[in-house]
Image 1 (cartoon, rainbow, N blue to C red):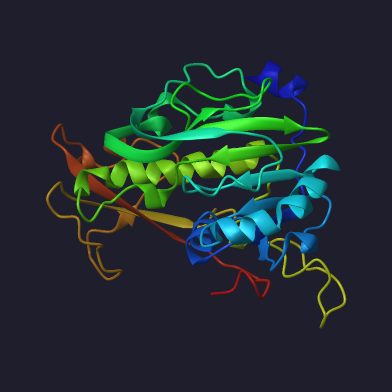
Image 2: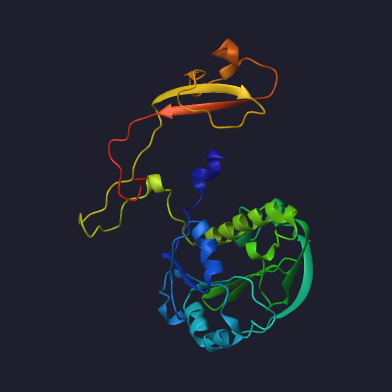
Length: 292
């Protein structure tokens, strides 16, 4: 691992995502904490951004934007499309065919395709057969797994990435057991975004207040939370999963890291139990975005 990291190339990230679509796609990006802005037309996408086409566009509007999108991709841009209906492929500058299909898994094994880097069979295994509009035929030179749920299609200097699976593909209200598969689909989309260079927002605790603050005139440094304060621990039974109150007398000092069973006789137990950790630390200064 160390040898790999020493020789690995740093990821090349784009400036962000220009999102064109409805609320479902925007909700996915917000849940993933993707760096995106909403636009009204493909003409508004900037070079260096990823163009993401979401829900609610329709075949007429997509056809109207065909030339604008292809001009962006020709110049080296990346366009990612979330699931499209059977009549919503008229905006592509090449021919593709689709078919209705039922998919329960897509095998990737050890993926050699850059688009699939970081994905495993687990993210593409579903606890049931999922109806999708699957890709059937794509241009020569494109990548498409045998189930047709994805395609990576080079086009002059850029590329089109078509994804026919999203969290909305899983009807968890009717089939509750699909909830885990739905969660995996979020992970899949996040991985696809990472692999095409779309950046995610930094965690709030590490995020600066702004690149150029309008009030301070300069960015604040990220907040560094080392969590090197005072740690205490509390043991409860496996059935007791309620969060213990701070005044509970069972809280005892604990060393972190360390094996709790060797620190206190009360914590040495061969049976299953729940162990809670609590840390008290001091934060000298929080940036506005990191503050609660």
